[in-house]
Image 1 (cartoon, helix red, strand yellow):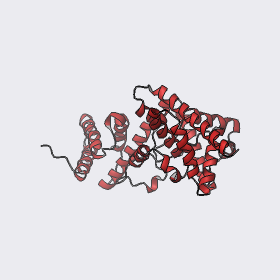
Image 2: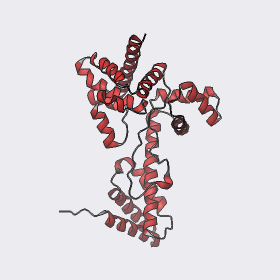
Image 3: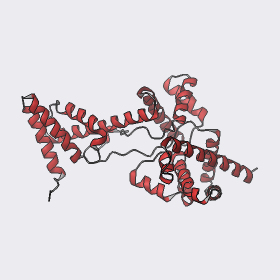
Image 4: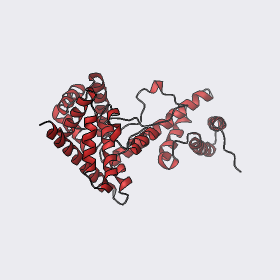
Length: 311
């Protein structure tokens, strides 16, 4: 029976490999220590997967061993930070490739997202599309027409959470924390119907009468074919989690599976992922299109239902 090494034992072994690398003169032996150190970091930080960030982690290790760090604690902090950044770099590449956009555009979109989030938090409300365009134009110095192009990219690509990097790296506990994606609201360009939904819901939340919205949503769901209802409810749940700042009033009609998944993973899935769970034979592109069509249908019915009740 093979006994697994404790975290403390792994840290000691990692630092030992680093120390030997620093004193070794033969290049082939030094390269051997890098390989051993690279292998050990995945046993030490199990949240990182070698088959995912193997290349980025290897390059990080190569950079770290060249640093002259005096003690074990300092070295482990530096190595942990390097692995964290390697993981972030891997996902940045994945995001850019998946979205089919350049890293430069992705960087601008991230900055826009953070700026909007902060401004809406300060304002205590969700900005309209026009307000976002004006604010971002002032924030970035870009013409409003160009800002709108970036927001349209965010809308077309259905961008929700773009960064796993810590917002406050100085306070980030590198040795004891786990890297998770934060639950971000979707700040992509809203359609008039989406803005209507957000405003209508927030109106009833402020009046402590969210039951009206729940009743409308449940009625829309039950009109679907019975076999389609679970997927429809799950997609609506994810939509509300991304669009509404306080969903507590909607909990009676939301999908528990999606809510529990968020509590477990600390991140929101993509719409196509939810659709594929209920329609596993569908291809990814088709799942994305079908999920989008379902949500557009939901928003359309929601608006029609509220207008009927309040002509």
